[in-house]
Length: 256
Image (cartoon, rainbow, N blue to C red; front, side, top):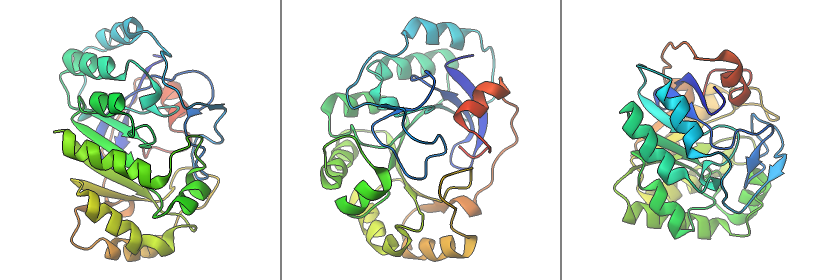
C-alpha cells in the first residue's frame, strides 16, 4: 500500500486508518514545524495540486476488504489540504469503507473558500493552533505561507460557522509556548471547537516533550473547555496492514 497505511492506535481517533495524498519521499508541507516527527520540510509548497490520481486511491481502498476502524484519517507525509482532489477523496473513502472521515490539517489553507468547502465534507476536522500570536507562530511553525496567524484563525472561525463537521483544535505544547497556555485557551474559547487536543511531542522529535506534570498545568488553563490531553488518553491495540508504510508516516512510535 502506498497511499493507505495503518491502522494506527490514535489517542485522539481510536483505530485510525491513514490516507496519504502526498506519498512522495520526504515531506510536502506549508509549514516546517520545529517539532515535526518527519523532520525538515523537503518539499515546501503553498499551492494546491494533484499529487496522486483518485483511481489509485480507489484501487487501494477496494483491495482492503473489511476493516475494524473508528476513523479514516487524511494525514501522512505533509499537509493534506494541498491535495486538490481532497474533497473527492473524502467522498470516495466514506463510500468505499463506510466509516467516519477525519482530516488532520495545520489550518494554513483554511483561509481559502475551496479548502473550507472540501473540509466540510469530512466528519471531523482537526486543525492545528500552536501559538497565540504571529511572532511565536512563525518561530514554532515556520510557515511558508504569507498569511498571519490572525488570518489563519479567521479561516478556522469561518469554517466553524459554515460547516456542520465536528471541529477539534490540536495544540502542540513545547518549551517555546508552554508559558502562553492561558492565551491559547482564550483562542480556543473564541473558536468554540467540539474538542481541544493538548499534545506534546511523544514520538521522536527534534525537541523534547513536556513532562506529564507540566501538561497537567497546561490543562488547567483550559478548564471549562472540552479538552483532552495526550498523557491522559488511552490508545487501542491495532495491527497495521503494512508496518513499513505505517512507520514511514509515524516513525519511532505509535501515537498519531
